Amino acid sequence: MQFDQKQIEEARRLLSIEAEPDRETFNQLARSPSFEIRALLYDKVGNIRPPFAHLDEPQVDSFCIDFLLSSFRNNGRSGDDYLGNEYSRAEAAWELTAWFKTFLGEGKGHQLLRMRDELAQLWRHGDMDARETILTHVLEHMLHIGPLRALFEPWSADPELAPAYSRGVEYALAFAEAVSTDEAKREPPPARSE
Image (cartoon, rainbow, N blue to C red; front, side, top):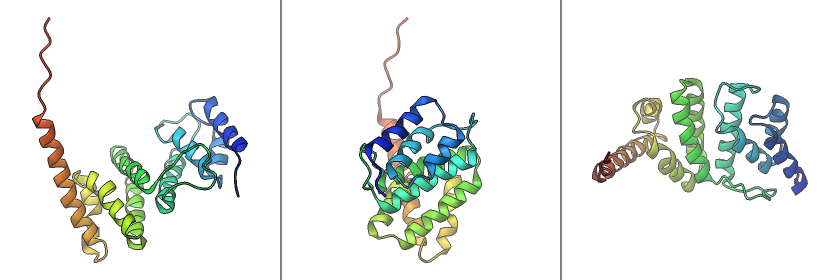
């Protein structure tokens, strides 16, 4: 079902009214078959963190993860993407990485496990591009963090996932070392004179 510019603009207007959509608006937009409308909602609520005034925290978290996983699987635009919101596979992967770190900081182990297991399925059923994106846009940028490396450690015992885990750890440690070395090479800012 195609959504026209008028429907998308109405969703944009609804989302611009308040800092946080009410529960009814959120539910209506979250269930929309329109990628563009869901992208507008993700852009609105993706950076809002609890406590919410109107929204249910687990519902928001689930919507955000479902939207990004769908974007990863579909790798780009839908036919109703009039406004240019695009969440390509790579962009969705970057966002998923940020959510892993957010959920780690918020102590949401159940969300971390769900996301890890969804990534495992994406790896198992994905093409070479999907696998490379998981490796270089997700694992490389978070497996240097001890608790996240431990979360993915069970992959090392699975013959299909073990290469992703070992290469991910290798890439992550090299990336973290390169960032650390680069930061050490930077000159300190000049001292302020009083």
